[in-house]
Length: 121
Image 1 (cartoon, rainbow, N blue to C red):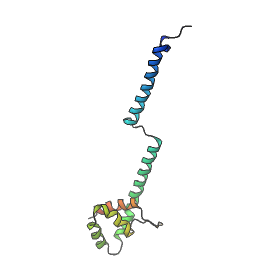
Image 2 (image 1 turned 90 degrees about the vertical axis):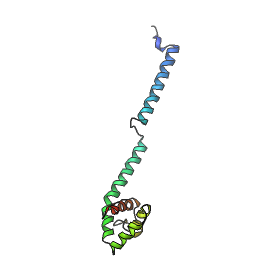
Image 3 (image 1 turned 30 degrees about the horizontal axis):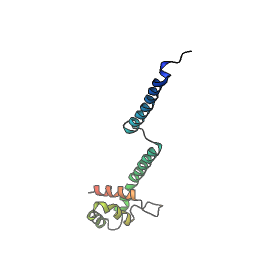
């Protein structure tokens, strides 16, 4: 039985080089532009998305606590005088981002709450 010409010597080397280069190109294109992700990256994105969704869902509770606090108008005026990068800290220190049943403020909720309070008139 004769061996096919492709599996002999120089042709086999070229075939294997083509297979390796094709696999590398597929991986580079797939991960770079094809939208492929590793499991760890997908988990990280899902965790971030979940935290953001929870914070946005809890922000109205924070806003309500802020509006029903004693002297809410003065507190809102003080909040508006605070620089934008310190507003979430202002919310945390005021205890508005501390959810019922919790003892500590949630920074993500404070950030979402500050954004919602900025939109109030």
